[in-house]
Amino acid sequence: MSDKLYTSAVEMVEVGPRDGLQNEAVQISTFDKLALIERAIAAGSRRIEVTSFVNPKAVPQMADADAVCAGLPERDEVTYIGLVLNGRGAERALATGRIDQLGAVCVATDTFAQKNQRQTSDQSVEVAQELVAMAQAAGKTGQVTIGASFGCPFEGEVAEERVVAMAEQLAKANPVEIALADTIGVGNPAHVTRLVKAVTGVIAPIPVRVHFHNTRGTGLANVWAAIAAGVRTVDASIGGLGGCPFAPSAAGNVATEDVVYMLERAGISTGLDLEKLIETHRWLTGVMDKQLPAMVGRSGGFPKPAETLKKELA
Image (cartoon, rainbow, N blue to C red; front, side, top):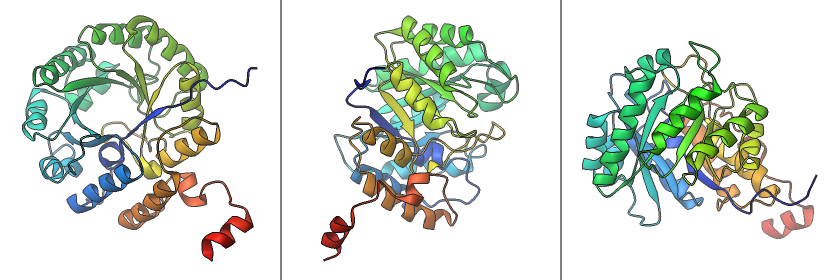
């Protein structure tokens, strides 16, 4: 096997403020959400999914979407992403004047699509195309995530051909990227490799982004497989928080600090400061008042030599 790296750099999308928090039972204050966003920026994050514009009765944790947007730091180099499921959500997001990119979602199975956004799978594709068009008409960009790409909590196995066909349809709207989401964490590296290559084959030059949950411990392996297959943009959540209110047993996202540690140690740049991510993990542990799933956040980075520690402490 060649020692040549798959790539020299990978872009990380921080989804903690939205996907990381949306399924938490304890209501997180707007102040703390904004503090998390500011900490992510300080650690180097330049694309952040800050909130979702959905019915607050369905997802109470995101009820303060407008307030979060009003408090976002003025940072021209940072792309703020708002998740939207329908035209009303898109209008709200655009009206804030702070959202740079709309993130639309479609779902690979009818049952999950109905529970998640009251649409059939085909309808969710059509709506996602419309949302991308709304973003473009407003001078913004739009991207689309295909939920349950690797398996559905209600219908089980999802045919790879189905996901590929959806991606091909979505590409007609010219989104900046199409993401494959393992919503319930059932994917494996072989499946990831096949699906990423198949989707890339029908949507190129539109890039593929990946969104993995670590529900069954395969998250990091899936990230590595995706990068080997050509992916250059990866979603992750500080602390490894995450879950979907409409998908049973959809445990946390791959943790930002875990992915950064793995990639940076492999010589792949992420542009993120691991020590600041670990500091944020510890701060977020206090906010959530519980142990967070991320491993590196708890263990720290690569152990420093004793001489280095002595100099730092001197």
